[in-house]
Image (cartoon, rainbow, N blue to C red; front, side, top):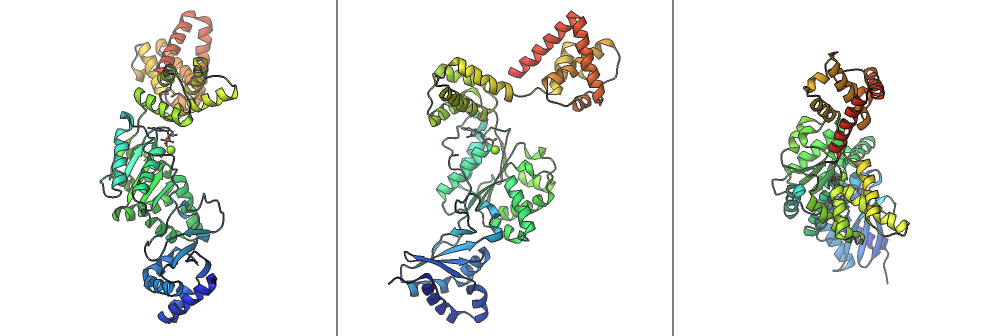
Length: 461
Ligand code: ADP
Ligand code: MG
């Protein structure tokens, strides 16, 4: 006859009760609810993680004894931890399809002592499909090294930085995934800085900051993406500082990514920045041509697209800034081709590439425009900042503002401030003056056109 979970649990309770004092029993065992008994596994629900830890710490032998007496040799126990207001902690439960308030943390007595935390890793991001190149050599190999010995190498924290679309997120997931493969018992957790910040806010709101800290102390490998978003969040920084110290002290691995090196992080406390420099900072750069080729070919296999060598080369010659664009081109090619039921030929590729390169291409800075103009007029750059009324300098200055307006997204105000603190009306006036002069002076117009070409060229080189 099959016994129900409550019968089984009651029998266990009888044994337990005889072996602990009434106060402890009341505190630690009364709140436990049996929820399921199946395949020799009794699932019990405990109110929170501390409960679980306390029980594991203090009553594991007794529990084991009771379980085996009641359920036989094969009997085992699973815990379900009610996370209620803690459920957002650690992003543990965010993507769970069954949207109830519980996290099931299966583990079995005797044996494993830990709750399994959902890593939140995307298993599509691996080392295998993270193509190696000069642009990422150091970061990639440091990542591999860490995967073999998390927490033990001197790369702690590993601080990966680089512009957007160069693979920071991919690489950090790859490290996490590799660690899980090699060390299934390690608790790996990936969070974005945004998620982490929200968790801190929620924890503060629900008065659960201690739970929050304890949760993070269970983690063996903590990956936090886009750490630059800690800027201007002093409370989150403080909490993170504490977590960082705890983990680091306990030789747990920390991996951080950022769009800039530690020293350039703005509005982040000095003590944090100095810790970020403790381990290894490794940058990701724009991929060189050969790496672009390799990446594109790998992505083609993934997307099941076949392109001739010539077409692949065309794309890689033109899409240079980052890997996300390279991927974007491929994906829109596939989409366009299937939508219009056409084959992918050079014309289509040109069209798609042009969109990417023109909309997403790097922008020239006001500084570079000033440099080009100063060179053209053979003037020292500082002259463009001054207030000299000398005609040639005035023209060069006005022309620089005109070009800055047409080639950058800077506001009039910020353009003005780039020219020795002029106000926006001066910029408007300058632009108008250039337009007027172009209408009346063909030679000047040619000069402007020449300079526009130079700016264009500097954008595509
Ligand atoms: P970041 O986080 O730096 O903005 P991502 O990690 O999101 O960049 O990378 C953008 C895209 O480019 C992702 O789809 C990623 O898989 C891909 N990618 C980046 N670097 C590589 C690489 N070396 N090999 C293969 N794919 C890459
Ligand atoms: Mg990213």
